[in-house]
Image 1 (tube, helix red, strand yellow):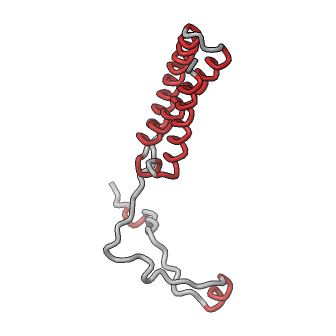
Image 2 (image 1 turned 180 degrees about the vertical axis):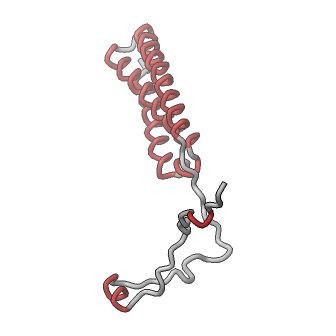
Image 3 (image 1 turned 120 degrees about the vertical axis):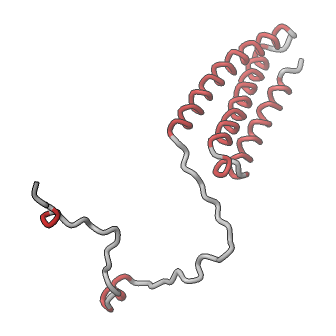
Length: 145
């Protein structure tokens, strides 16, 4: 066999040296900035891992299963309220609020389990949990006689 090492194509390097910027490039780019001092030594920065598609699919299927169960619970709660002599309109509203409150709560739990760093902050959890609490309180209020 012949030695083909001299005929091989050169491999591209990982970095390309473009040299220092010219005066024309400096004036065309507009503003110049320096990254010196932009990163503080000793500071800790949160590294957020990307959420895998598999985890999103599992959370989505879990939410759908939970919503089906909550819908059955809604219908059962409405019938229970009507058997307690609550007006049918109030019973239906109470059941709908129970369904909405539990669904919002399960969405908050699913988001927290997907990524506590991204979704565990008050920006996401605050509105979800407060709306869930308000809907559950309305369900309890409308279930009264």
